[in-house]
Image (cartoon, rainbow, N blue to C red; front, side, top):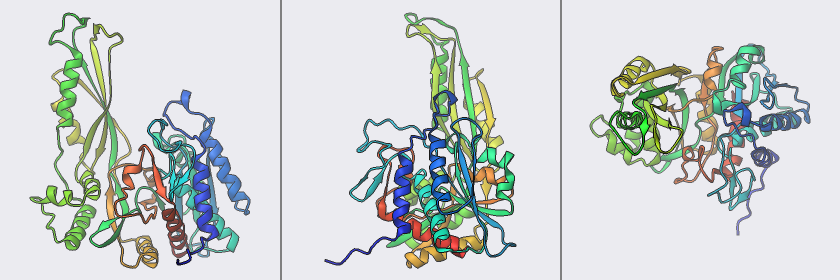
Length: 440
């Protein structure tokens, strides 16, 4: 049998650090009363691993338990803009029921690393930590300054993480012109080869509350003047609404690339079936073609035999650039007459140049490991800490390089039961990330 290539210390440390970080229960519920000190303990672990090799760090803790760490490796060209590499250390909650392995066990089984944060995003935190140590250990000097940021609170908007640092410690990112973090870099099927998706933009974020009112009364005497019925009908109309498709320059180029590779036209007339032919890749692209509204929380009543006088729904909204006003008006039209629609603006959509030198460096680093592959820019339908760094004029990109099996949907692992990543993908990520940072 052929001898398996020996893994390097860089690759081994990437896996070890990712697994160890998973074991910190840095759960971000969004409720200060239920958030423990997991983020701080994870940040201190990162700080210790960096300082072991003489890398100076800055630790901040805006609120108890909400720790972040920032470190800078100086480059050879003081005039080159610094590059921010960021990964968040918090994770969403995980109920152990249904998991093959404990969600905070960091277990490796059959070539897979299991655990909450395996792809979102303690995998990249482990890779960045290993790469920073590799550079320090070998005395490797990048061309530009590299700012490593290991952050709290991304899962609840970043007020105690990237947002706080941008507002209160902007000097830590002095001279930075670009940032690299989630969500992208994973391979997807592309004909008989692979494409690696590079997020060059992100949808905007907003939320809305819909409140309906009616007459309260005893549940034994139901009536139509019922706030719950009105809310349910409103939510059903909103859920059935499909915003018009809009092809941004990035999305149009992505569809054209898939058209050339697959021989399908990807015209407006055939778009639905053409995207369906791409499987999970098509679903991801489809989400970037239009603004979306998803009801996520419903609340009404305090007692089972009482018809409440008020009912409320929370809506998660992701908008394409310039569509906020139109969508806000549409929600009011879809709501029950007399209902209150409370719109709350979040971070706006962002878009970075898809032809910057950094994107070429990323393509070259991928080609060195996967010669037949291509790197394709896309619009991320979600939101990341790149939106905070944009306030400092920093262009944000999403690229966590992961070469995965053809049928492995990385995006579906986010917030999922049995979240996992192939160990070989972490080895690949470490090699490619180190190459990107050396070339950048």
